[in-house]
Image (cartoon, rainbow, N blue to C red; front, side):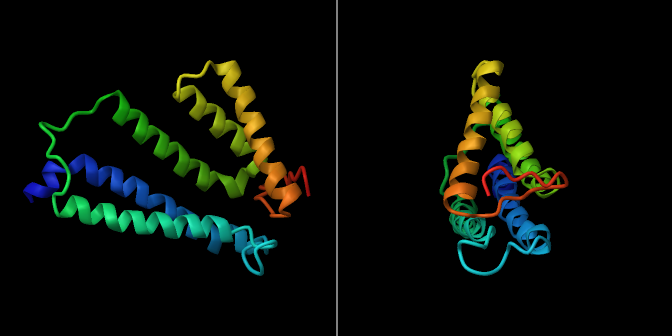
Length: 163
């Protein structure tokens, strides 16, 4: 029990990180499958890349879980909640919310919003963050939709810019 209390923040971070691959596999099995873009070859399977990332994340989760369980991390004295911890938890929570909202509102609406919010959290001025979020999401959409012919989640509005 001492190990659980001593490394409580490590376990909280581990659980938040674990929610990401769960959300990826959930979306692949539900919304992407319903859209008909979660099977077939790499050019038609919008779930293949996220699933690959999720598998890598699961491997990292196992390694980090073992590291914490075996007390191979520095023992904190006493656990604190500082600005960095708050930003890390908020960022992870926002990313999980983004993954859950993505099939409903679509890539072209959700991605500029999450990018801009994350840029602001990193200290970028809001107007520059919005411009950067739009530029980033359009660039990613161009590469995946336009060049690689990958179907991105279109959401309830059916928005697809480069396909």
